[in-house]
Image (cartoon, rainbow, N blue to C red):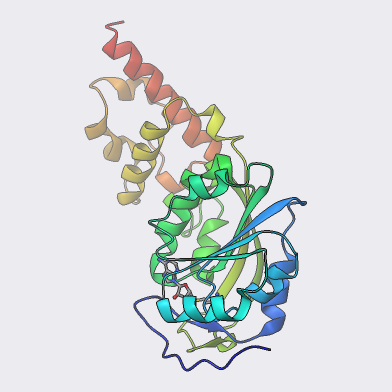
Length: 274
Ligand code: SAM
């Protein structure tokens, strides 16, 4: 039996609670990673998704920042041996240490995540991509579309490229704003990230890759020639003729990797005085 809870939703913590149990069931059922798993939920809130995740009977760790909701969750599910709740900020918690406590299990992260910290959460997950198997996340629909955007479209950008390096992303389904309380202004969507280092392994210098992508998209109307010149050693553009007239949204993930590897190679040549 779920206990009664008098709680006032907080904007600061991006609280838009899912009100449709079918959607929660679909999110839980979307897990593709086979057992044995460790289920990690970001912001379980009032437990709408939690109850379906607990049905897996596998270790579950929820991380909830709101003390009132954390207490409520502990009271409601604390009697289950596989339920664990950490009260605090997901962005501050040591995800590596958490996962290391369950070395034999495949970590799967789930959550209807607070919209105001979507990007920091995504980037934290990408930082831990080699330790995670899968993430199933509810995000704003607009973010979901950016995560799967094709080159040449307006949604294609930094988020898509940096995510694609560490994960294959699938758009699973749209969830209308009316399925939440309080009702948000926009629709949401559920995406799946299957973590994989396939692309990351091809990148010679990931910091350089990230810098080039970020810098280019900050000036997305400019040709790469113009946006990258300040970052690169003199004369380098002559060696990058094939891409320098392109705009950032025209390059595929493979082309970004090839470009950054080429720049890394030229830079090495410059620093070693070749
Ligand atoms: N999972 C619940 C649901 O679907 O109804 C709640 C979703 S609500 C969009 C986001 C939840 O994340 C809230 O419970 C909020 O308190 C929690 N939250 C916000 N910021 C957080 C953070 N930095 N770390 C952990 N939880 C956070």
